[in-house]
Structures are given as structure tokens and as C-alpha cells.
Amino acid sequence: MRTLVVGAGGREHVLCHRLAESGHEVLAAPGNPGIEEIARLLPGTLDVSGLGDLVARASAEAVDLIVVGPEAPLVDGLVDRARSAGLLAFGPEAAAARIEGSKAYAKEVMERGSVPTARAVCAKDLDGGLAALREVGERCVVKADGLAAGKGVVVAQEPGLAERAIRDCFSGRFGAAGSTVLVEEYLEGEELSLLVVCDGNSFHPLPAAQDHKPIGEGDTGPNTGGMGAYSPVPSVDPNLEERVLDEIVEPTLWSLRKDGIEYSGILYCGLMLTPDGPKVLEFNCRFGDPEAQAVLPRLTGDFGELLASAARGDLDPSVVGVSPDAALTVVAAADGYPESPRRGDLVEGLDEAGEVEGAVVFHAGTRRTEEGIVTDGGRVLAVTGVGADLQAARDVAYSAVDLIDWPGKYVRRDIGYRALPAG
Ligand code: AMP
Ligand code: GLY
Image 1 (cartoon, rainbow, N blue to C red):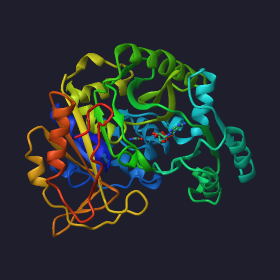
Image 2: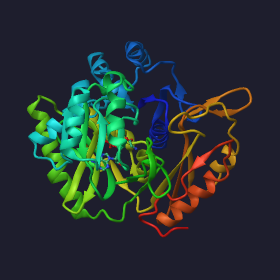
Image 3: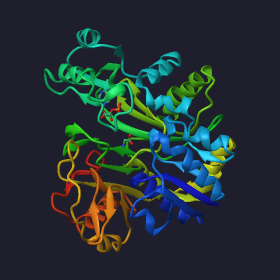
Image 4: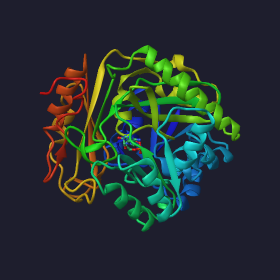
């Protein structure tokens, strides 16, 4: 197949990598310098004004399958446009992508399906927000309703923080995304990401992963898009997976159907494993980043055909298998991330890191210049190690990421700590 991956980050790099490894031709728009080594890049912007051109290019290239990485073009209707142009596209249409695009809508869907999730109170203005805070209590999580590039969630770890976050949202910091705010009960437990491939009718879970969202070791400090991930997760046994599918995935898809939505693409279930069982923290309408960099390297077989069959509405899970190997991904971030990452620092050691056996270096925020590859975003690289177990995978990932350097490079040293002894 001739495939086109839409996006420019680490998740899109691993999508390209897996499609290429399963023997497909890969195009990417707009891609990045790492993707360029394995795919032909097409120009394009992912804002809503560029989506028409993107579909026209895909048609002109006679692409067999479009795979959309990030949430924004999904919410903006890229898959709807591609399907209208007669192209096969993997991902939810705009109405379905609202499950990520509006956290208030996701709560409505969950409520209708009796899906276990944190109790939340929605507010449309500051007075309502402060009333919601009084109702839920100081130990809470404040969330902007709309897409805020992973920055719209504040876990109130100290007094006063929740109120500040509510005031921040209503002061317009997130634009329209913050005009509705959810104040949510704080849930305690271990987090889990389950990526479920859906075809509008049936579904198939990929191996579970655990992400590390906070910037600091021991899960401290502000949230980021994700500083590292690993798969498998030892605390997930077949019973737990079954429970998530029965209590969360099935009723969510059922509830979406009540709105006329046959969900197709990835349903990313962000879960908290609480003493009362798994509860939903969030749904995303796409592969997780960096979860994809830890999950996809474990899939054997034809990953492209898995996605194509789902996009056709005829999901065939038998085209892939799961390797017993473990994978662990470490994100290397720029100085100042997540608030204000510095750009333009020269990255050294990429080739050496790529030669470490079992390691793959995925580019996330990089740019090619005459001097070489420079940093160009908050999360700069995601380095995945694959090994016989998590310990081996971690050793590979850190030995590769430690060969890479730039001024101010930041890496969490404890990825996988819940599953592994420190070291
Ligand atoms: P979200 O984008 O909604 O998943 O939130 C980002 C991160 O904030 C999650 O991965 C959790 O680490 C944390 N979080 C979100 N909601 C809650 C909650 N109700 N209780 C505890 N932590 C949460
Ligand atoms: N790593 C979290 C996400 O992709 O939303």
C-alpha cells in the first residue's frame, strides 16, 4: 500500500517506522527530519485552512491509506474530508473526535453509558467555576474543556492552585478551549493507557502502556504531554483488560452510537486504576504520544493492514501479533519544557544512539539546518529500547538516550519506576 501519515511528531515517526517495516510505501505530511529518512515528505500545514490541500495532495498521489496522528486535524474534520474525496482514512470523523475535543461532551457520553469516571462539575464562568470548586473540594483537578495541547489540565496539589487554574482558564489563557471548565474529583492510583482499534462496529485492544505525565521524577511538577512510557504493564492481567473492555469500552461505544456515531480509529482510554476499579481520566481520539512509541514496536505482522481493515469497517486483528519483548520509551525534552522550551540547540550523538542494538530514536521536535539537526519543540526526541524484559528495555533506552546531547537536554531518569526497582 501507499500510505500517508499526517503529523510531525514522535508518534508519527513510529507510525511511519511500523508501516515501513511492514513493507508499505510511506509518505508523510509535513513529517520531520527523522521521518524524512524513511518516508517521502509532502508539504502541508495541519491547521484547518490546510486540510483541503492535504486531501487534494493525497488524491493526486493516489494514496491507499491515510493515517492521521494528531487530534487537531481529526477534530477539524480531516477524515470526513478524506472520505468525501473517496480516500481510505484511519481515524474518527469530527463528530466522533469530539470525545477528545470536548471533555464536557466526553463526560456526557460516559454518564449515559454509566462508564466509571471521576465526578465532575462543569462551569461556564468564573462564579460557576468557584462554586464548582466549593462543591468538589480543594483536592481536585481543573480541566479546560477543549484542546489545549496537553496544557489545559491542572492537578491541584497545593491549596490555592485550583482557584488559580480556574481564574486562568476564564481569563482566556486557552482561548475558546477554556470557556467551559470542568472541576473534577481527584482520583488516586496508578495510570494506564489502553489504545483500542475500532472500526465502527468491532474493536481490538493493543497492549496496554503506562505513560509518565509530570515533568519531574517521582511524578512531581506540572503535567507534560508525556515524558516516557513502557509496555507491557505488569499490573495489567487479562482480567483487568477484560474489565476495561466490558465496563468502559463497550458502554462508551454504545453511548456514542446513541448520538449516531460509529466510532472508528483509535479510542485512547486514559485510565486510573483506583481501589474501586478502573476509571476514565480522559478519552483521546488518536494514538498516545509517547505510548505509541512503546506499544507499536511490540506489534508483529502487518500493522498497515490492521489500520486499513479498521478504516474499511472490517477490522481484522489476526493480521498482527504481540511480541513477548518489552519496550520502554524515554523522552528527551528541551530546556524550559513544558512552560517555554528553548529552540535551536544543536543535537549531537543521534547516529551513535541509533546504532545501539535494540534502540530506535524517534524525532518529535527537531529541525534540519545547515549545521545539523537542532531542537525545535518541547519534546525533542523519544528513544525506545526493546529487550527481553522491562529491565533490558530500560537499559537499552537509557544507554541510547545518554549518547545524545544538546545544551539543556532534560530526561526523566525514572521511566518505568512503578514496574522496576530504582537504578
Ligand atoms: P487528562 O488530559 O484529562 O488525562 O489529564 C492529564 C493528566 O492529569 C492525567 O494523565 C493524570 O495524570 C492527571 N489527571 C487527570 N484527571 C485526573 C483525576 N481526576 N485525578 C487525578 N489525576 C488526574
Ligand atoms: N501521552 C498522553 C497523550 O498522548 O495524550
